[in-house]
Length: 295
Length: 289
Image (tube, rainbow over all chains, first blue to last red):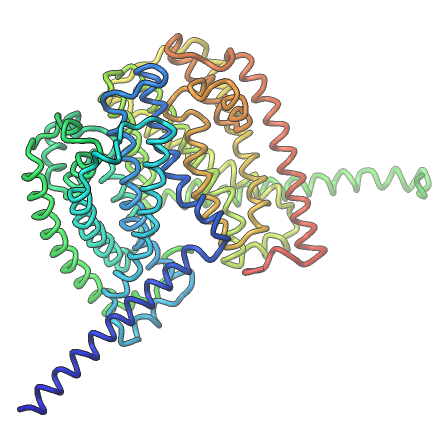
């Protein structure tokens, strides 16, 4: 009995150690794959150019309508949304494309699959550096918005616990979505490379990344309220800019929005893991682990 | 000084003409051959409707809804037109500028360089095929976007609209051909460069706001990108008096004419340089080189 228990404990320790090793190796691999093509300064510029440019486009749109250098109403709303969207761009669109690059450009995916590592853990590891990169980009874009463009964020008034909670729940939901799309990308015959961008584009519209969901048609607004990213963006904005920024949001209470975010994130995570496992099974059965779709 | 006798010169002239005719025929066949997959083969996969029409439309809708949220739906037409023209920029960036890089990675570039036709004809085929295929997609985006948001157009001058549109496209594809040569000097960086320049160009060319909003100095520099003046001219001609403009449409078309010469000439020069490096020096055409 004692032997069985100690053998079970040993197995658990080995499994935990293997998970940790896999996570560490996948994280390091992704970090290198993302950044070792250039020097750190150029890489830093590369990280912030896209969200900052989107922010500037939105600022110019705002100033075109409201007059040069106006800062009222939606100004902070636009910048906060554009900055936060970096997480979605990096992970939801990025992780599936990293998997496809491993399979088709570097032809390494089959070797990753035959190691004892769990592929789900590999994917989480691949998402972690992207999260860090997105966080840096988010912070720099916001800082640029506050310091240069005059976004009304008072660092002393930010609701940090709410921001932290929103970001953590958001990370879980976004990573789950990235994993689900990575699984789907493995089994798609055509359009595997474009599919993550397509989903990100649809979410950009549905979750109200750069406009209040109140302006959406009613049927689209209903869909919007089933997506965790809508709640995540709303909470991030409320934490940064105060509750008044969400006056037009269909749900008034911040606590209720937090509850909806938690609920939809749990559902999304469960669905994502199931979809990923099904896709993973079919990809193995059909020999799609070393397939090439881009030719 | 010619070393041929007059009779020999007389017999050589038709031979030269025949040689030139053959060269021209080969070039045109090459161009058609390279345009074919973009025009015909690409349309065999109906999923392009989703990825190349619905996807850009989603982003355009998002920016159009920003104007709606700001209480200025009159500017939605600017976004729709900008989004339609952006389809050409995306095509130039990913299917022209990066194309020779992809061809090198897949081993086709060596075959291109060994073929008797000039690289210029191959690039011209890519450009024409890409331009026509993208025109169909851009038109679909424009029509659907206009229908969804109820945008109406009041065309001031059809000839100027057509000239501005064509000049900006030719100059833009010339720029794409120049970038195609430049990208052969890079490897993995190409992907990053593409991602880095895609969005700033959307900002600088005024895809979602009139370019004048950038201020005269930045807008002046941005005018070096052919899309900027093309878009500003077309917008002025279909949405008269809606926004502050950079120059009059006539001037913008004239400058676009100059950009056509500059970028197409630049493309020819840079492609000759790349052919020299590949054929004489044996560099640039091999994977990972």
